[in-house]
Length: 247
Image: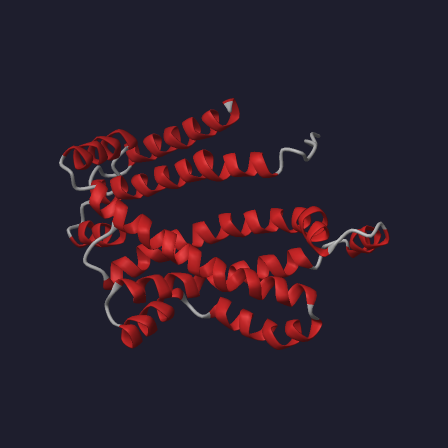
């Protein structure tokens, strides 16, 4: 914890030092950005837009996991599926997120369904690749050993396969969340009348750097809260049995 606090303090100090040598309108310091964010919260301008963005992030992440996890697992356990799908996963990975957003908005319309579809489809290939590589590392000799001891399929799945796959599922959730958040902001910027991305673009058009940094600081703090307050706790519960290795 002390190392984390030291790294955060170092980053804030660096931000403050750079802001001293830059024009105030180009790079306000951390104090100005924090005060601006606090003022926005007090005026009631933050929570409605943040809530909408979080709903889109949640829906997009759910869609990305629903697509990416089965495809990744199927490719990892089936060589034919790997040969058929690997090129399409790579194609999906290389298509820019802006293209997904534009195509979904044209086909579905400027609505929430198109927004969530664009977010989920953009993030799904990255999740699929992560699960694909993870499943290929499964030690199937343990499965054979479990069969020798006459364990049933359900027990093998719960006690042998899932413990080996779950670390990659959690890594995919982390990766997907980071990708989905960035894409959600981009999609809001080009096609929605609300959300954090919309507010960022609004203040960018007005060249108000303090507001841009305030909204950037907002979703950074939210992401850290999700990581430390939710994902870390889930990880501790799921993988508390694993020994810690220190060097």
